[in-house]
Length: 199
Image: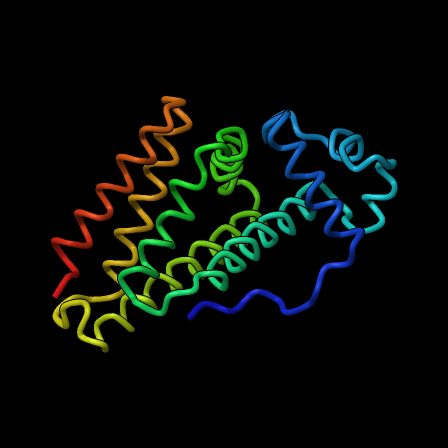
């Protein structure tokens, strides 16, 4: 599994800055995001943010880690231990529950487009992707071990395919501004699981 996110708890100030970054990204997008815009959402000066994060890139790397933590919170809240249901809940969290996050998904797509030019952002995006894929892989491997999923499939390949469905759907959602894209992708993921994984 990829390196787990840090166990260090964020301070209340760091949490507030992350929430302000979330709001600013939704309002301004990545291209027009400034420390001043984040500070306005935070209700303090840019100096207060620079005390914690030297540059905008440093802040955005921390924000990407924050988003991963939020995803992991969702994973921890899944109550069932049934592999098929867990897989469905993960896909719901990444697709159906994102219908109201168009602006944020758009901003994150802009950030991904900049990743080749910003090493720290790219490295954090890679960490996020690897960790999410590992969560999927672990659920699939558990399902294989318990006889819920076929034993002749490769968990890595299936996890990568499901993540590709999610990422592709989010990109199409940004381009088309149509939440039906996310619901269609969720149905496609179900069909893929039924055709490839189910025992």
